[in-house]
Image (cartoon, rainbow, N blue to C red):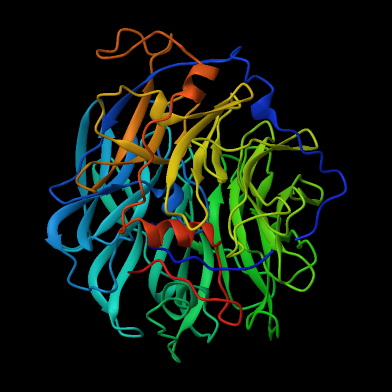
Length: 521
């Protein structure tokens, strides 16, 4: 799902009995770990102020924004202002028309849109270069009076509109290496609790809750059979976000149509779907809400968060193929798992007994082999979140202050967390405020802010043995203790970024009885 996908909120709690907090960041603080320098590469824009990547901006799951061949996908602003303000395509506050982009070997290519003068975004790329995302199609959705969006696939130089299931909107969530796409689309069946319209319109500052909304259904698309509705867990709606190379699909679904007093919504649970087996209900951690489904690996393991009993707190979960496991917290009420690698290592955020006065905040965690590890924070900030982990156990994310006035990107490896701003040349104009992806070769995709306040995607190429003879690379290593002691001047979060960070941190599905939140500007 793309950047301005609003956070479908939920709330989460209780400590799992097996939690064993370990401050791994302290294990190697004596300087035994050395980090590589990185060369920052500005993805640039198409003439507007900002560029974007799906990780962090996606309200529902992390995303594979770079493949094994070094192809990166995202989107970037054009000079044209978005004509549909305040219903802006982008969330960073500049409200420009944006186009999907593909970056390869230093060249950014505009992938175009379904309609001239409208916006698009590329959110996921497979190893064959096939890319999925969304595009406005030049039509106004009569249900809400704002642009329609369609899930799209870019392949062999062509853009394919994946269509809908009879309704007005669709979103492509992920694509595997066989070209199968998972996502969700509207049908033409009336549904007052439509996931799509609740997420993008009702539960936002726009406060548009259309009486004639239609149901949202998870789909799988392939070239042979087109878009296939994969059903629900018994209720009217379902959403699919992830698909692995086995063809397994992860998402969440209503289990019935009965409204819960705590949430104002019917119960919905995470699911794992497989062709020939159908949709398996993964359950919850005692509550009625699957707050987030953020990661799916090749072993069929799923991570995210669900509410606990009473729906007032949420905990990170791991579906290990047999049962839904509560990964716990560090003594605080809430937590969320953001990604899982193929070894079953999970990263995310969990709260300690003390956290920010507005109940937000927490610290990055790594769950591995049954133990929840506290990774600490970087740049002297109080909070952190690990957003992605690669197959080598390297994790990235960001540290942030209470109130999210200050934020800084980090890399965690070999038991050591380091501010990424200390690993790029001091001459760089960028301040790296959040990292959302790290490839198995160690390339990192992050957001960087220029002195002008514009935000661009920055690719960080490690100066290591896998990337030899790169012009401008410093191949000397940085001692962990030296990197910790050197802190660049922290910058306040630009005003156009603040709503994004608050939205991401306040979790995925905010029910009106509990709070409201929005990603649309």
